[in-house]
Length: 192
Image (cartoon, rainbow, N blue to C red; front, side, top):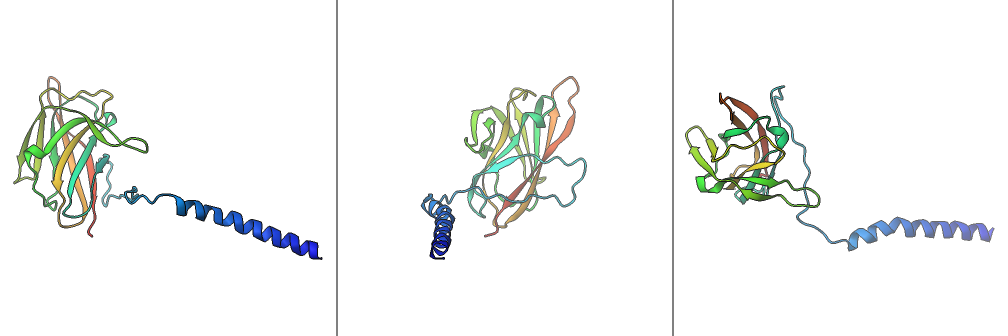
C-alpha cells in the first residue's frame, strides 16, 4: 500500500512540475509593451459596393502625433491612376497640411518586417478644407502593377476618439479618364 501511495505522490509531484513550467517560461519572457493590439473592425451599414482597404498607424491615442499609412495594394487598383481623391470625415478635427501629405511605394509590414516607405513619389497635393478632401496628382501615372503604394498622413490625432472612415476615389489613366470608388479605410482612435 505504501508503494501505491508513493506512486500517487510521485505522479502528483510530476504533474505539478509540468503544470508550472509554462508559468516560469512566460514570467522570464520579456514583456513587450508595444505589442500589437488586435481588434474587431465592423461597418454599420455594410453594402455590396463598400470595399474595405488596409491601413496602418503609428499611434492611435488622442492628441498624439501620428503617421498614418493608407494602403493602395496592387489588388485594390485595376487600372493606372492619374489622380487620387481622399474624403476626410467631418468629425476628424485635425489640421492637415499639404507638406505633411505624401505618396510613396510602400513595404507593408507584418510579423517579420515593418511598414515603411521604399520610395517617395513626386506628387502635387491640393487641400480643400471646405469640403474636407485631399486631391493627389502624381507627376507620372500610378501603374496597375504589382507594387503597393500608400498615402502617408502626418497629423496630430483628434481630441475625440472613435471610428473615422476615409473614402478614396481614383481617376483612371487612358483616353477617357473615369473617376471611380477605390475603397474606404476605417481608422480607430482611442478615447483615453
